[in-house]
Each structure stands twice: as structure tokens, then as C-alpha cells.
Image (cartoon, rainbow, N blue to C red):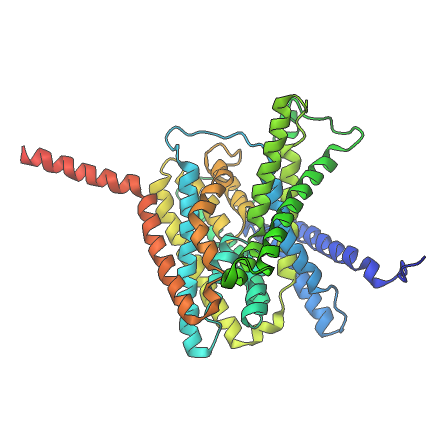
Length: 480
């Protein structure tokens, strides 16, 4: 019995060819960064630079030679699943938490700062695109892709850009989401370099910006004391990959179950919105089920049914890094450059990306100075890098000033996530509501602006109450 498929058919090799192109582009980009000093000092991640290189080469082959190098559909699938698998790997890790006694609420405050960054980007983006909708007819809700592309990264920008295009008629919405996320990495690199140059002039840091990091690790960094051996009947790395995929498929089964309820009409008129949210925020569920798998393994260990630790933080970090690199380069390479010829595409994209970067930079400089006074520069670089790129970008910038990750800033990037999900839930909820009509977009804008004010009051609570207390004390002394 045959399948009718020949081993030399293109369909058998298309995925392997695409992956090879992605890897080769990253290696070329990394070589260029290490060879060209000015390029290295720009601190653009190799995956980002590789994405732009591959995009240019692919466009040349497609437009001039009429030979496309890859199918955008494969890249979009890689972008979508890279996000979910990367977060599942991060959730499975066991990270030793550092505690700065002067900043016990660092993780919560970081979560608040991150959500406020999302809200600020959403407000800026929506105001711009609603105005441009009246002027040139651009899609009124496209501005909400700014916090998804800048704050959440390529995976979310693609997912919701695609949803807006297919469900709500946003022409070139998929490429718009890809492009916003790509410009976010550029904003991260430029803003990070500007901040680091400023710190250099003040004498706070020294040395070459973007220099190659030197790893100083012992065996303890690679393996815990009671972990399974590196290689037995099943390789240790294979087990890590298996756990990541198990957590991700559990998330899929949960989302599929909810989807079945939606198709049965259980949620009525809200079904469409809930469906978009469920599949659009799959990384949240992969995180939850990753934590659940880790919790089950911990309970099995304590009960005596399992005698070794099966998760390895070092390998899980490598898996998440690999997934995020694939997600980033695939998202950039999937951009359709022909969309840039349309004014309703390029004008809002240019304006929201520039204003979003400037607003994010100024806001976090202000916040980090007041909320994280003991490590304000580390906090700013890590949060700004993450709010315009990904957590990996934040770590790249942080390494320049805190190479051994000795401050609490590095831990805040890890432990802020539950707080960000909690405080950011209204934003996540309304992402599927905004494109349903101009009136609903304006309603979302008002809600985002109100939340931004309220959450900033909470974030700056110590400074506000301290000033009130100082003023009250001074008044009492004056009266006496």
C-alpha cells in the first residue's frame, strides 16, 4: 500500500528547507554581528537581523526570479506555536528567587509597570489609528496591535493581526502585526543603546556596548543535585522536550474543549469573542498547564512515587530560547513587503511605532527611577527591552549593566508574569472587542485610559503616601 508520495517531492522537504533557511540566516547574522563592530554595538539580536536578511533575499527571489524561497504559512505556524512552546518551557523551570529586602514587592511592581506599559501603548495606538481612520480610512482598531507587537512580541502580534484580517476585514492585518513586532525590536535596540550611552557618559558603566558575553558557569548551573542522569534509556534533553510538548498539548485540549462549548452555543453571542481570546492567548494556557505539570511532578516526588527531579532549568532555558528565536525570525521573514505600498498601511504603522517607542521609553524612565530606586537602571533596561521586544531582549540589555544578574531585575522578569496576567486581564479581554466597531474601539480607549491612571496610582502608592505623610507631619509641626 502506497501513499502516492515520492520522497523527492517538494512537500516532503519544504519544512526542512524552511527551517534550514531560518537557521542559516541566524548564523549569518550572528557572524556579521561578531565581525562588524558598529553592528554589534547596535545590539540587534541575531534572530532579528537574520529575519530581515532572509526577508530581503526572499523578496528578491520572489519578485525578480519568481522563485519563492518559502511559504509564509509555514512561518506563521512557527510564529504561533513558538510563542506557546516557549512559555510552556519557561513555566516548567525551577528558578531560585533572589530577595532584595529593600524591594519586597519587586515582582508585583514590575507586573504593574509592564501592564501600564501595555495600556499606554494601547492608548497611543488607538488615538492615532482612530484619527487616521477619519483622515485616510485606515483600520480604526489597528492601534491595539501596538501593545501586542511591542509588549507581547511577534506571536501575539501575528495571532491578532491574522484574526483582525480574517474576522474583521483588516486588509494586510497579518503583515501589520508582523511589522509592528519587528519595529519593536528596532526600538528596543535603539532605545537600549541610547540609555547605555547615557550611563557611559555618567561613568555608571564602562567597556564596549554589545560586547560578547562571557559565560562563567560551574556544573551546578547545568544540573541539579538530585536530577536524573544526562543519558539513560531516555535522554535527559528528550525528557525536557517531552514535558514541554505535554504541557502545550494539555493547553490545546483545554482550549479545544472550550471551543466545543462555543460551537454548541453555550456562550451565546459572546462565543465569537471568547473563541478569539482563547486561541489568541494560547501562551497563557501553556503557561498555566506548564505550571500544573511542574506541580504534579513535585507532588509525585514528595509522595515517594518519583525519586528524581525530571526537569532541568538549564535545558528548559535553552528550549525556550530556541523557540523564541524561531518565533522572532519567522515572524519577520513572513512580512509581505507589498503592503508597505499602501498609505493606509504604512502611515499608521510608522506613526504608532515611533510614538509608541518614545512614550514607552519616557514612561519607564520615570517609573523605574521612583519605584525601583535601588536598581533603577537595571530595572529600566530590562523592562524597556521586554516592553518593546521580548523577555530575551530585556535580558540582553540587562546583561550590559548587570552581567551576572546580581540585582533583582532579572528575577522580576520571571516572577512578574502572574501579576501581569492578573492586572492585564481587562486589556486581554478587550482585544477581541475593539475591532467590532468604531464605537467599541473608543469605549476600549476610555477603559484603557482609566485603568492606566488607576494602576499608576497603585504603582506609585509608596511615593504618594510618603509625600502625604511628610506633608501632614510638617503641618503638625508648624501648628505646634
